[in-house]
Image (cartoon, rainbow, N blue to C red):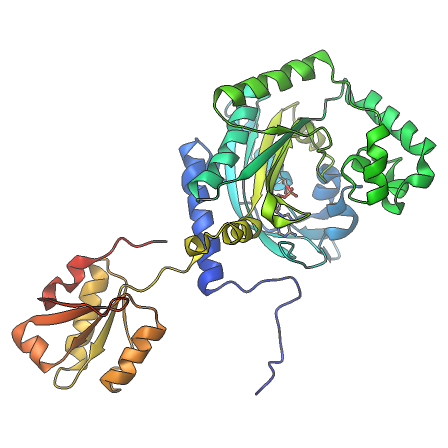
Length: 421
Ligand code: HAM
């Protein structure tokens, strides 16, 4: 046994076979669905200036505090993107898209990078599919975005995803809540975990979703957000629009999520089988980010769904078949008498006709080529020899049932099964 000299970096995943097929299938499903709702793709680069994330996600967010892959160069510090939202906002402003239409809808998909302790469903390179809707504060768009994420899980066959919903207030009502929460934490500092104690001055809200048992227990006594009338009306309309559209959700006043940029509506898609970190996706409003980046006051909302978390949920739900690699439909075996060129001609004709077709080593015995057909997972096999080319008829064997039936060689391509991506 030889030991390879190199291995993938810890927490980074090689995608091929079934794992790649599952990822690609979810990405294709997302692209189709998001386009159906009027979203257009945006594909920003994977590397941005580090400052972009410090500005948007917030200095006290977990991402900025400890999860960024930073590249130091002479001219600037760069970071591999830990999420897509700040890039889409930058792109929107840099290309003056805010001047072109009252609001704009984007979707994106691709790898994100976070330096986390690798564990199940937590990787250092993972994939997200997401949407961002910029330029609208209309509760109709909150409802559209929340319903769209929920619809994604329905489309890919994952039942049982729960929407957790909350509203965090805005610049009118949040500051007082922040102060009250800070005063509470100062008074009870001895009971806080080290992380909450360390960051309470900068971001006392993070205490609300801290997983430490002491902080959890303390929360029962903590002050609650008193939403202002405008936030209350906004949240009420979002809820009634979701009710009217038949989208069910659970109100969760403890939901704050790890990013500092959220305002008003906040939501998470969770799947119970995943354990403590059960979120398959999440999002919310970030009505201040465009202005933070130097643009005009612009309200915005979006979500990102975790592809790997969704695949794990699909597997837990017994839907692993949904994530299997597409199989080969036909494997062509060459028997004595016929020429390689004749058999190759049939392979190419089948492929051109849309049938997923392959062949093995034409020089080897029929038995060995049949083994290769098995290993390739082909659904059908045809053996082509002198007789088949002389008569123009062949026997097509279904590998699962071993049943055979006779068809014309020239019809092999016509039986193309619909190809799954
Ligand atoms: P997020 O909650 O940080 O939100 O990430 C969304 C989803 O990505 C999570 O629910 C999880 O499924 C997945 N995810 C996050 N980190 C990892 C990881 N290390 N390994 C595997 N999966 C992971 C955002 O990223 C926001 N940009 C969402 C958003 C869009 N808000 C407004 N617009």
